[in-house]
Length: 158
Image 1 (cartoon, rainbow, N blue to C red):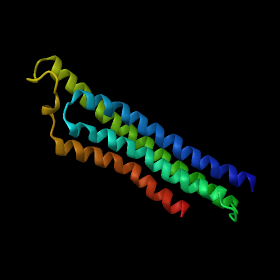
Image 2 (image 1 turned 120 degrees about the vertical axis):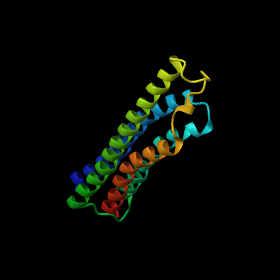
Image 3 (image 1 turned 30 degrees about the vertical axis):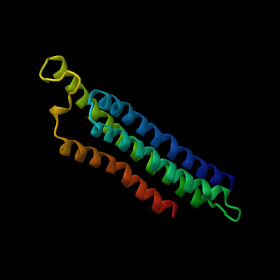
Image 4 (image 1 turned 60 degrees about the vertical axis):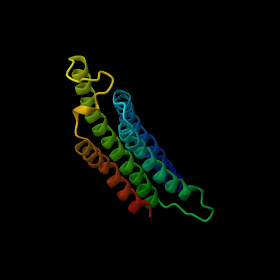
């Protein structure tokens, strides 16, 4: 039974650690994007990147409740399920955060190029060079990868 509790604890820890890592990677690039684009809508990727960490917190909390419940008995099968749930949400958030970060990194490089070459009239605001609807749709589909991992983890935990 102690091995099952270890797997359960590892599942909760990996859910938090991996989803936080994916969110941190995406947040770093989103923050650079937000500082280069002076309008308020540039904060949308920062919020979306932070949501990835919330997915891990949700699953980590649900898994940790299985350990601390007074009358809970964690079998080996349950321990493996909880470990897989943590890995499911964690790894999907890493993939989602990596995709969002690379996408925003490319946009940051393009914005820097346009400002540096004088192709944007206002040197403090590079946000006129991209279509906002397309930008948001790309970010939504990249974040959906993390959401899919959350859904699978909820099925495994529930």
